[in-house]
Amino acid sequence: MLKTLGAVVRRDLLLAFRQRADVANTLLFFVVVVTMVPLGVGAEPNLLRSIAPGVVWVAALLAAILSLHRLFAADFADGTLEQMLISAEPLPLIVLGKTAAHWLVTGVPVTAIAVVLGIMFDLGVGQTATLMASLALGTPVLSLLGAVGAALTLGLRGGGVLVSLLVLPLYVPVLILGAGSVEAVAAGLGGGPYLLLLGALALFAIVLTPWAVSAALRISVE
Amino acid sequence: MLEALDLECTRGERVLFRGLGLRVEPGTLLRVAGPNGTGKTSLLRVLCGLLQPTHGEVRWRAAPIRALKEEYWSALAYVGHLNGVKDDLSAVENLRASAGIAGLDADASALRGALDAVGLVGFEDSLARFLSQGQRRRIALARLFLSAGVPLWILDEPFTALDARGVACLSALVARHLAGGGIVVLTTHQEVPVDAARAATVELGSGTGTPC
Image (cartoon, rainbow over all chains, first blue to last red; front, side):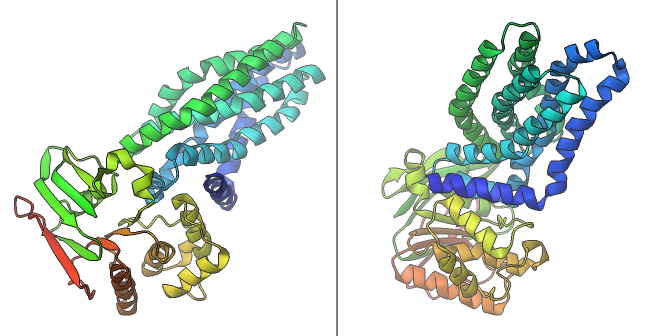
């Protein structure tokens, strides 16, 4: 079982490496959206400090949405998905592997880039660390919930817009908790409770969403 | 033994087949024949469990496949009309990935051996985007060389895009599998160039299915 999980993660990472431009686009989009905001609202340091967590998190959500089409569409088009559905190994495991690979090439770089963005918005060390911790715990949820949307809209015309409408409302708790944790640190309250809730959401999503995605994929491929 | 009872399949508004029953014993080659659009691929997908029939059920060794799930799929190798080959992976990487996804055990020498057997010697490390249609088909078929222990093979138009030597090679592989007590279900528009001791045909498109 673990061998299959490893094989799926390795394959998707290798594919992402061969299609680097696609991965880089998502990350560039994230950086560009965040850097646009100071240009729009003006360079008042206190204002920037207070909106930074929200801006970074909204950009992270959009970047996640933008990358969701990569998750299943290519496998669906070339027939690999059929092979996954009739694998001798459980489908939720394969789905978990694919989502893990998706997180490794979107969530992890986004979390790493947040250090630089923290400096750009003049966040303190504590706030930047909390921002990164919240992204590290929250981005897996974005990948996992996004996978449900991507699986449900697979093969539909206009699936790209539909997936945003389906998934963005589900992202709301992650956005509130993620941005809230940094604001709580800024207010001197400590981000601990927010991070714990984000961690709980992540665990919840890891356990439940692969089953939902599997069911959705079986319907979509029929 | 693979059995189908009273299958009905509809796509959209159209009934493709109704009341179709079949029974395939070990060592038998079942050819699904019929003009385009009569539901050959749909029947294969129903037999794989990828498509739910609107009526009836498929049984493997007397148990319905809907209940067996992974247990059935571990006894099944399916090569569809889509190859499941990634442009950005080399032949050997493609085969390794599909073996991993299928849950097959295959070490590096088994992978190379399978690619050699389908005539891709020297192309193991070329990216699939630089290979021809027939060569990509061969990568998909190489999976069958890793599936020797898998009893049921379902092949959708396996001979398309293959040259004469490829057809001969695949026919020999199918014949060997049948001789070893395996079951092969395939669709093809050509005459089946396979020597099978036991062969049957299901003709679709004549209104009702013919039991065999």
